[in-house]
Length: 243
Image (cartoon, rainbow, N blue to C red; front, side, top):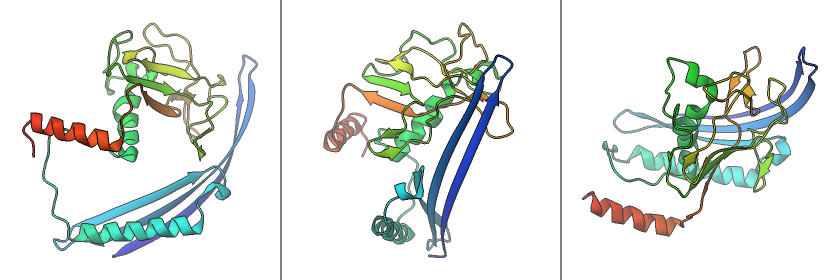
């Protein structure tokens, strides 16, 4: 292993919003992040990194030392396995995404395309621009964005807030129900036939607010266990004549 790093960050933040309409909002937020990083050089010279991150509103919400050390040992074990692993070949076919990868997939591939302000941009994808009321996902999939949820199954949710950065109260937005696109995430910028904000106008410090995602929840009416998913994967691979 040729590199290793641990970084602990703690941030306290206060946001003020005042408008000529009479809105006066002050919001406080704290968050902490622990990042662990390691890198190994493979026999062919490739540099292979792995990361592990932990998030919480307060340091007391982070895992205890025992759990973190266990995770670091697991990371080291995986790095050593990677060092001697064969190079993955290009593949097109059925796959099961791990939970972490699935979250990033929905955020990047779906979530950004239903941020309303992007429909006014010539450089952004307009995949769902005229799809409200149409089927865009399987009927057993629901997608909801809910900034009012502060915790889920004991985990602090970083996409939570009470008011957005345009002074609009946060609200739960049902974007997809039974596979049908119902709504876009909206700031105070009107788009197509949507003229009202649903509390998703957000901004980094010093930047203008635009439509941004909050806590993203993907639900299904047809849940399957890992074992059942693997059976379906094998069945589909065989149907497509994949190894």
